[in-house]
Amino acid sequence: MTREDVLADIRGRFGADIVELFDKSPKRVYVEIRPQAIVRIGTHLFRTLGARFNIASGTDMKDWIEILYHFTIEDLNLLISLRVRLDPGHPEIDSLARDIEALNWIERELTELLGITFTGHPDPRRLLLADNWPEGVYPLRRDYVEWDGTADRTRGV
Amino acid sequence: MGRTVIPIGPYHPLQEEPEFFTLTVEGETVVDIDVRIGYNHRGIEKLSESKIFENCTFVVERICGICSTSHPYAFTRAVEDVFPMEVPIRAKYIRTIIAETERIHSHLLWLGLAGHFLGYNTVYMWAWKLREEILDVMEILSGNRNNYAMFKPGGVRRDIRAEDIPVCLRKIESILPTLDMLKKAVLDDPVLHARLKGVGVMTYQQAIDFSALGPTSRASGVARDVRKDSPYGAYQEMPWDMIVTKNGDVFDKAVIRILETFESAKIVRFCLEKLPDGPIDANIKDVPVGEGIGHIEAPRGETFHYVRSDGTNRPVRHKVRAPTFMNFPTYKATVKGQTISDATIILAAIDPCYCCTERIAVKDASGKALYSGQDLIRLSREKTERLRKGMGGR
Image (cartoon, rainbow over all chains, first blue to last red; front, side, top):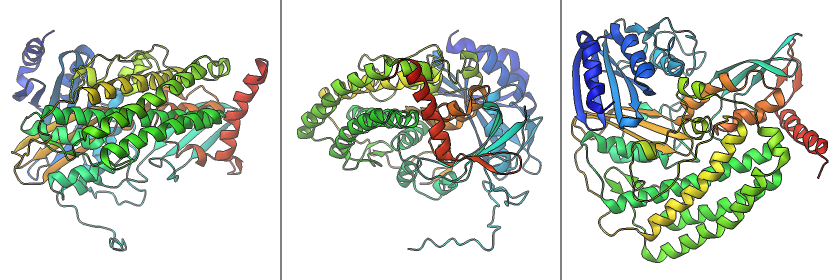
């Protein structure tokens, strides 16, 4: 399969779910999709097209919360980033970790740092933050404020 | 047989990062494993948003104390991908030299520690002695034994002086005969074969499912290396081999790292000899609005950085993914069914850090300590000793 075949394949199969396909450079393609389609498109990339899952990155964009799922098809030297936009009030999306083990940790990380709910995650326990970190406080949100009144932030210099 | 839960960790600043393992064992066999990380979460992604692009390079250089150049490399490539733009050819060569010299020292460090935990302290001494020569090369080239501060978006910060090149070449050449001897000693040792072969096996399919990276996945037959798949730096300029093995056990992971040091030496030698003339910095001024992704092959696997710019001089989002984040969860596949005395070396085989090992405490259900971390290293060494005696002893 060539690069064009892969992009045509994605367009053909998931045309109704694709919001925007941005062909940035020979090595990078950003595909914005509807959040409901993430499991179908993600597993298609991983299982059928043989892409490797790099990582997902979440960003609080104020008006929406965005996740980018980065996949690499090494034979084509092509990095495909699937972009979803979520409602900042209730960011929620289906879990890909049920189908792809490699997403297990990063979905847990996104839950803790950005407060995104991954429906159906097989192991939604806390991974990174301390046990006494309060529920509902997300450090990578724009509106995050220091919650620990006793914390000493002086650096001693 | 009753089950025993073994808590391992979390605090041990000896290597890179603390983590907390819970091993569930039946007798000597590990039946389940769970991991908790984040004890040393430094919030670097958040911190990075408050720094200008050039200063971010210094922040990310401090993520890892061993492969400290891999994060600046991935970060600068992510910033350059926002444009997208290419750096001058001389800068590419210098970047490659730094990255590959670092790979040699990182693999030697791993080899030494692996030897230490198996009761082969001679391997430890030899490997770390060779590593000193490499650190000397780093000091000559960059002024630092570690945290080289060579990278900046658009190029490198320091040039390599022509008079330093012969000294560096000589030092790298000087370790190769000893390294070759060490390679043969490790690869032909029947005790090491018995100790490491078939231990902690990860299959090809598991490596794919976990999206494992670097030597951890190449040991399972996954022929993937960012340096080959998405060439950057000077890697397409010279011939070199990607090392891939099939068995997926601890032995193969060790073989890959040893053989890769020779390939890295080859690459560094080529770059130093053929270092082209020209500028070392593209002098980029303003980073445009947009997104950039940089990924490079660090000693432990692909390091991945994502940068989002809004046109100001600071990133609005900077995502860092170290290779261990993907390699870590493979424990689930490799440790189950193995013995406690093998857990130490399997946990070490992906080259994460050894913070866990000396903090291991085995407790029974009542909370009484059965084994300490020292005991587990002792168990590991005793097994090697038993095998050695069983083979006629030496």
